[in-house]
Image (cartoon, rainbow, N blue to C red):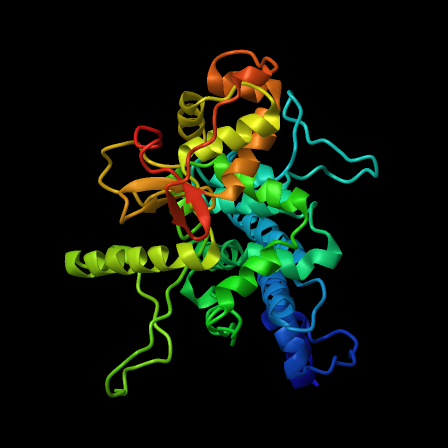
Length: 416
């Protein structure tokens, strides 16, 4: 019976030496492997359980996103990934100590606040990321993008929105994985649980036209949100892979070795000077090839000015257009070493003609923004006044066609 009591003490987590064996005989609890594992799990700190819950949310988000028949893949992905981020940062705060790691909303006297239901008021995700990431951190901007997008998704356009924000969705997941490993160690990463999905839509011959057609069905409110958010960021943030993930797929050639894998990811900062030069050349080739195929990036400045002025019925000059692309940092200034670093939705650098050309999306964006009196004054430096009929600028004389659109090179020679 003494042996039974020792076993009972082990199951209960009690030191057997502290027990008296002179008292009445107790019926020992059955000690099983399951009960021992349960007690071991119970000893885990609260932050560990919160971290596991976060990882489960992220895994669920990816599973739902990759289901080809799922009707609400983007909505589900965004909801569960933002929950994953929230629980991950909460786990970090629960593990650490000090005033910088406080999860609660407090008043001026440092007292915790309660909700209407009596629960403690916790910091939202938007506030937590502002405490752990700097203002210009691309990871923070990526998260803020999805926090804002979450309330704008319309279920019937879910598939179209997925195509529009695919790069940002991939960046959201990669940022989560990097943050998880950075704060909690490589053993907690999700890399061994996730798989690279198989896809065909973006590598077929007519992919550009297909993606463009899908984009045309995205609700206007969502397109406006995406454009406005990207326009509010500096070009370096927009181009950062942590904000919007972009990848080139190049077929591997030559004999396969034992060390080869089907897909390899190489960081841009790990490339040498020759490799970077080759990458720049490849990007230029791809960019030039995209322009005539997709019909993007073929408006000269005077065409933009004339169209915008006619739409807003306010004075809008070439100087105002220059002020506008500077205001929203759409392209680099003259004389830059990297003229190709533009906000590609609005502007692209045409290498053969050595000039910047603009998109229909840029015209739509300017039309919407310049119709707001406060924005108009902030950009142009003057108050908006109605445009007289005889003030309209003459449209350009067509002397050259590009992708089926008439433009005038000579007349636009000094335009920006």
